[in-house]
Length: 443
Image 1 (cartoon, rainbow, N blue to C red):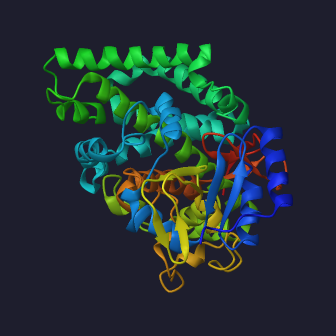
Image 2: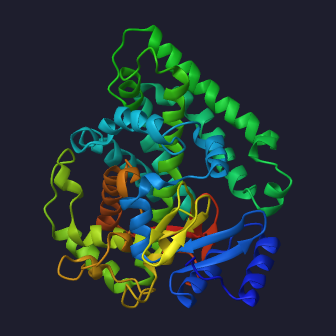
């Protein structure tokens, strides 16, 4: 049988939300997932019938066991290509396999270890700036600035200062435009896309011109660069054009920048909302062995890792992820016809009370080995599952660990107001819906 349809009343309320707000309301879907036991069909304007999935059994089947039968839809790939170009995020099949084989060595453990000192130095720089000025700062923007500086040095090393301001201007404007001009129902209905936005076209062209000039300059000289761009250029063959290198760089920037900054923001928010855990983490970090910056163990602190994982459980950065069924398929007693549209989101599964005890509570201890006993691989997947799991998963966890460890070990971040009712704003990632101001104080 096909997955069950939701009631006409529930469907009408959902349609009203889509028409009113222009995108798919995450919180409404979350409630429907609980009501309909993690799998249901719904009719959405311009998308038609869509299957919503949150049960781990179905998630692991789609993303892991039978992933070749479930591909990203053409429309989602076209939208994503406007940001990422044609790269690991948008490619499929053999093209994706070749791209993955070429890029994945950059993110192996030994290679990313060589960049840890940059993360430490940039964190030290921004915290020193906060401390010297004593002014309140916006949480999300400051973490974006920090992650941007880290990525810039990782990607471009000594060339970064020359292109920093142009890159920051382009990326900030592109992020803002994509968030405020999301491909809503109305734009899809009249077949408009981000390509029609003149600001997006202008900033995209400026960004690509800067990267094109840099790649061309490096190809014309004999200097060896050990940064990420240099490593990507070293993979070039006659079949790999500059265009592909540029798309790879854009993918690393856009995939890492907002998602990492957003997760760091949620970690600080959750620690402030749970002061006992905040205090315990500080004491643990202040008494732990301060290993060398270059030692991979520097970022390996179990309590901190559990806190980051719990933040990713409650607030996974990725918004809705669509898939298309390539061939007819059965999962358990449910039939997924060829061409069916499927939508899933880690947040639906991560907050399922059938899987997680007290699912909305911030409880990092649930990730301790003796407590973490999930029955299915599809129960927790903030970075995806299967061969298309985010290549930068370990790198992102390491960056966030270094940053949080440095800050919490030395300072206490506080908000300038006491508003704890913080929701989610759905854009490129699921960011806090309030522009929170912070100050830092010594412990």
